[in-house]
Length: 222
Image (cartoon, rainbow, N blue to C red; front, side):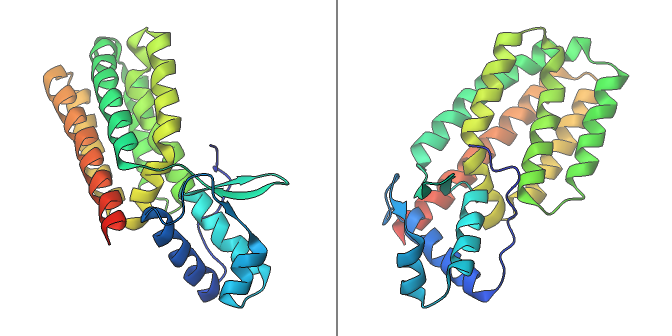
């Protein structure tokens, strides 16, 4: 699902209230995947016009909780801690191998682009933009692997995990922690320390999985 052009900012308190209520219901499992979110019914429930409802749905779409289908309305996206954990476990296995393949071929250009991506990500508060830059940073570390099929698989996995990371980004301090972990990974990458790079990358992905699993399960248990 590509929500790259969707802003995460809502229009005001009404949209925030609607978004909070729907988000909680989705994460608790009270609204199952595929459930249609009818704007008329939501507007009536909250005694508001369609404008804040649309803004709230756009917010939830940016977080990956809702899928907005052109001319067909919005539905609840599928989201489970088990799926997130599995996707991240697969990513961890493939990405740590990819970075081993790529590191011996890294050069000044790779390092400069990875550094530029990190600096850019530290300057944005927009979740969609941060997600895009985050992918660019990771891909830059792997692109010299010389394994196009592996890189294609990593990209596919990234697209599948995207909506989960958006939830983590907007509901926790994940962004700050991820930035610090990225800095450590790049420092080890810069000096060619393969053992440190793979260890730090594995820790980064494993920690992301832990935080996301805890967040999703907490919402579902409340």
